[in-house]
Length: 128
Image: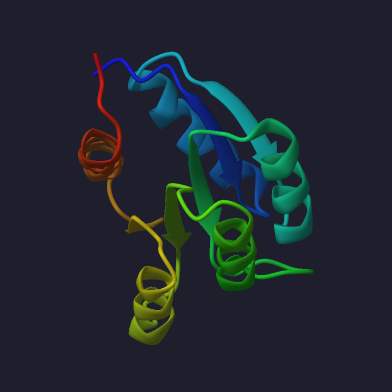
């Protein structure tokens, strides 16, 4: 796969952003934007209009579910994959009900995260 789109990676933990960004770079050469909370993510989304958002659920200031809703209000076609360390089924179901394309658990092995990202990107984008 060679995904060269723009990606917004949102997580309040810098080491998670670094880990996920390394996986993303293996999928192609995307332009990567980062945000550490939901408010920052919304501002970056509105400014950069990324092709894909990877969004943590549990964050300070504005959680991922609220951020997802605001991104989808701004851009109903936004492609958002939720990142979670929670095993809370209700949060995952709420994210999917509010338009998330997929969710990935942070404790998933790197190869499975890569596979889930590849499958979601393939489903949501026509790659040439």
